[in-house]
Length: 117
Figure 1 (cartoon, rainbow, N blue to C red):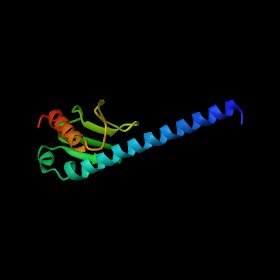
Figure 2 (tube, helix red, strand yellow; figure 1 turned 90 degrees about the vertical axis):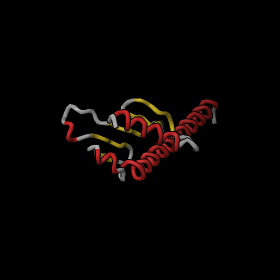
Figure 3 (cartoon, one colour; figure 1 turned 180 degrees about the horizontal axis):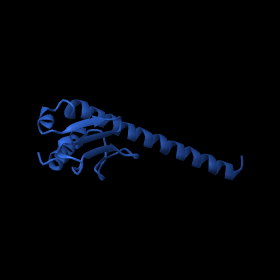
Figure 4 (spheres, one colour; figure 1 turned 120 degrees about the horizontal axis):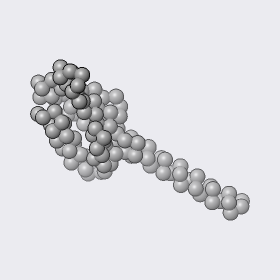
């Protein structure tokens, strides 16, 4: 095998590993959002009392107040491509082991702030 072939094989292996790591981080973020939605958002009576509806599609949580009309801004929480959690365009960073509770509290604070609850 030539040196060029060896270098290209090493580069392909590195890219493949980076892609696998990226997919794993994104899946962790999606799993975190699912857990957050199922445990905290969907069963929340207070959100319902304030007229906030929520939907989850596997990688995004959309919260909105339908009765506020078409000009009201909803809140979207997204698992980004690199495994970060984005809230309406603002990155809260990636999910790291042992930081789930802190991220959950950040998301709760963002929801309360956005909807002035």
